[in-house]
Image (cartoon, rainbow, N blue to C red):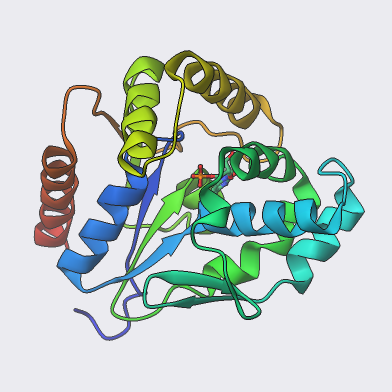
Length: 226
Ligand code: DC
């Protein structure tokens, strides 16, 4: 690698349950890169807000909560203070509140530095909604991963059942559609493909096939760079 070249970032954006978290984490492991799950930051903000009894539409209070929290990422676990919140932030109610706080521009601004600070040598794989368009516009590879709402709801259903959590497919499909609509239609960093992003619809692919596709794209880019 050229010593003066910027630290490479691979940005993987897409809607909920498109598999971007699984693929991004696996790709980071394969390349020996760091991994940023930016959705976790919005979920952490939502959890903090819900616990404090703050209204998730109160922009100033949510911004203050986002700026004050000091999450610690350690050995695949996420802590707020001494509390391990790894599972708590995956709760459906926290996910829905996350999509509300994520629509607030002040909250998005409050989380920018934390996200940028994840860019460390030898490289970063970042997943979210605006990794390519806003946080890392100079990413060497921009991927927009998507799948049909039915395929994504089914994946979410299978995940919950595997964890022993009871779930209802039609409720999940409805919640997913609601969250998609809010993420796509919001003014601040809507969840749409960034300019220059390669779009991958993985409705009929498993995680391993998706990973191979993205990995090959990165290898092609590496091979074509001086
Ligand atoms: O990817 P996820 O389901 O963990 O994300 C939780 C919420 O945060 C989701 O509603 C979209 C939002 N989000 C965002 O607006 N920007 C990001 N970079 C990541 C997530």
